[in-house]
Length: 129
Image 1: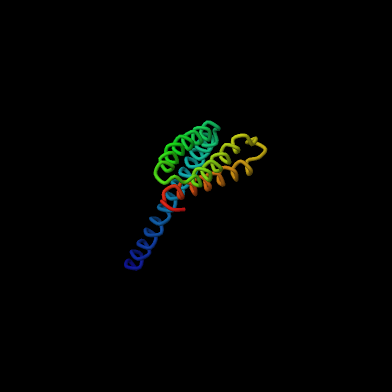
Image 2: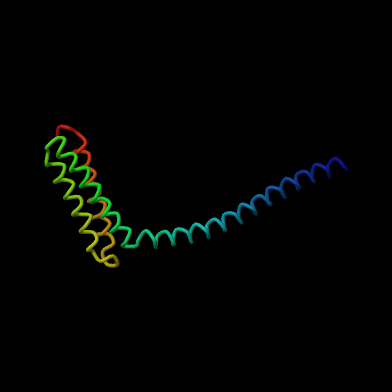
């Protein structure tokens, strides 16, 4: 009878350890979820700030001027500059869309503008178009 009790105690002990690990996992999950939700809401507020978009556009304009300027000197092609300028204009247009009312339009203009600008930079990298 004692051997059987020892086996049952081992099984109970394992079940208790598993239950304790599950409890610990539950606590970690709950705390991590709370921290992540708080962090994402804070980051979302910061990343949605219009200054981020305006600063990003300013950086894109400066880099575009330098890169496309060097490209025109190097290969004398205007197409990359035209494509890049269209991309920058689309990105700039997104700044004038009301953020609360046209978030989808703002996002679409920004993504399209960035894609067109990247295409202009890709064309600018190649000697022939």
